[in-house]
Length: 251
Length: 266
Image (tube, rainbow over all chains, first blue to last red; front, side):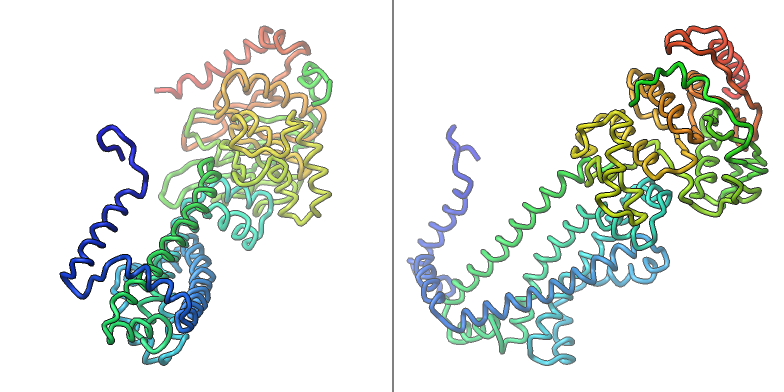
């Protein structure tokens, strides 16, 4: 961005908003919005809080397991849907429904079935992440060029070989896009799951902070979560760019 | 490539035994489109047979039926006496759009047919390296397809088809995506390879000059629904590529074919 002929650093917009926040916070217009400096102060406090680290560990654990299941099941399902018309007809309506459905409303159902523990949070992560992974893997499998498939057949590939040596790799750019979007949705899933369960992890912390009106703590926690989601997104889009380098030459 | 001059390759001996026999093959697509009507032809062992015809006449369909990629709706194809029911190790294929794996190196692409057959890595790479050198790509083993020109990519496709040591190599307009200069060089190199490899080639092209220059036998197909309208055995004299391209027999054959095909246009 340029202003009065001078290049502004990339984060300058963020800086303006931070200053504005600080001014509003200091002026004390609302208790909901404490000054930013105070929030950063609480970050240090969080860093020595054991329940924060427990919550972070639980979040990381449930996120990793949930995402693992979503990828491990979503990619093969999507690829198979892309190649087998019958399966596609059978599953696509469901995938399309769930991809746009208000999934939060389903979390209480999972809770009723699996209780207030980590299983519910893991399943919430899967529920949020898997649909876009399926849909993008399916799109990837469908975009694989016919001649690559014919080539594999001519040289005697078995069905499994065609799947692992052609489809999985030729569809990799789309699969990775799906995984990236899925991982971002999974961040929502892991937080919403904890908020609704609200007796473990960050959900528990949020519950404590909001019921005691500890706004500075709550904002500090939010900043941590935002930064986490942002970092995950950045890492994934970097990986995606690396893969697209090869995908660009796809025939 | 070996130092053997192209001139000797031109007179590759045509054995009488047919390697590929196409018997009354027809193909009707589920949509009702009739692509081929009772096609019968022989491809002599050790020679290069070209399927030539107006565009959209089903040349590629016929080639893919021989490859076992598309089932025929009538008739049968025999390769080396065996009825074709699907792809088989005695046939390999060179694709019009190269069909290389963009994520794999030249070496892995050339060895891919062997990889699918479960040949151990060191063994298949040694074989692939040999054929990469034969098609003139020595030194490019670790490049990726997108780093190569169209002509070089097709050489990889050819190396892959040769590496599986099939008896019959099917080529679907292999030079159509390649520029004219590269194409001529490629045709000359191909003639050398044919002479050295002693394999049977079935070639699809829409270029009359190309067909006459490289073929031992040309099968002219009519417009869809295709039938065999003429079979021409080409007997070109020995000589340098330049001499051949100016030779009366070469020019006359082109003229004959052109007259045969002309009435299909319009």
